[in-house]
Image 1 (cartoon, rainbow, N blue to C red):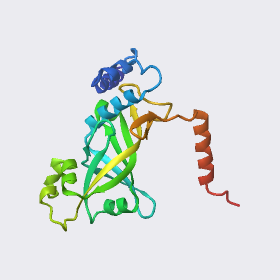
Image 2: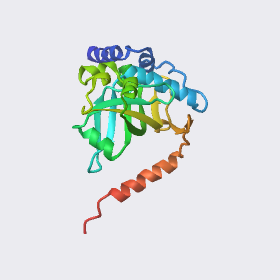
Image 3: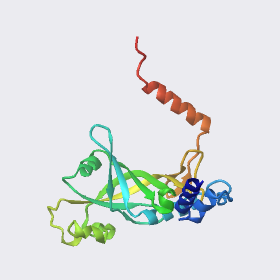
Length: 223
């Protein structure tokens, strides 16, 4: 009996870090979900909130053999509408070669709030190199100067490379605001100067597509 109480007490202490978690544990009503269809404005509010909380991003590229390649980077958010970012690296790095071979990139940000269970944002788009000195200075992040020479004093033959990333697709899950799909992230696509909600395929269609992919990837039966 005492052991059972101790386990319940330990579980309760682990959940009371946030009121929402505690209310779920003790069986009280959960937070009210987001009502109605997800709008572009509500998704961007969540995206900016998660980006503010995350700070550091995962930059995902395509390696020469086609496999995904991912690393953590200190990136700079340039604006709150387009959600563009700037990045810095050196000519000797893998990502510099990968950017040159394929400019398609995904930036992913994990929300550390709610003990890491709140959600994430993933932005997919393309990078372009920034060459002109004043343009580099405009997108430079001060913390980069700890590892790279500032753009105003870079020699002409510098191996420092600066890029701007422009996303055309946004996916997110925000459990705090209950912005989440039916086992599918909230998704926006960029059309000219605006973000728009991407149409969600029916769950049955997604299940069928997954089943077909699994069948095609399965090894042939042994004779």
